[in-house]
Amino acid sequence: MSKILKKDMTDFLKHKLSTDKHFSENALFKIFERQTDEEKARGYTTDHNNIGFNGIDGKLLTNLVENISKKRKSNPTYRFSNKQFQVIIFKRMPKYWKQILDISDNDKLEKYYNKHMKNGLQLQLSF
Image 1 (cartoon, rainbow, N blue to C red):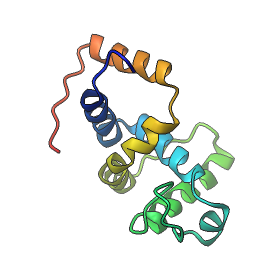
Image 2: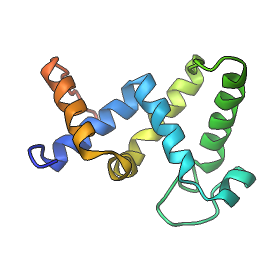
Image 3: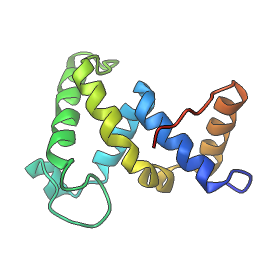
Image 4: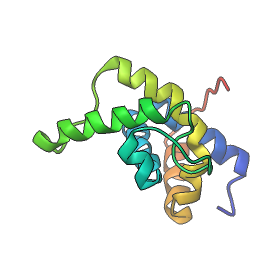
């Protein structure tokens, strides 16, 4: 990410996590994958290791992942459509921008950033 300032990428990721349904849902599953096996089994966060969901979000977001996963068993292309889920995900996911940055392929993320900025994405941030 040599050409993009960290602040710009931070703002971009926070924006995408709080406004883009597809991006935030994919991120939700990526962060869930980082939970320990014990946390996944219990359905809430037990380890304070800055990986996966935090203690406040753990139970709620794990529950969302499980609900979406169940629906995908019968419909593999299912995306959450419940407005309440969307509001929760858009509100909770931006705080996980650093983990998304850490697990992303930097070249792909830079191309994704450039594509969206080239297409005139205007970041109107409220954080």
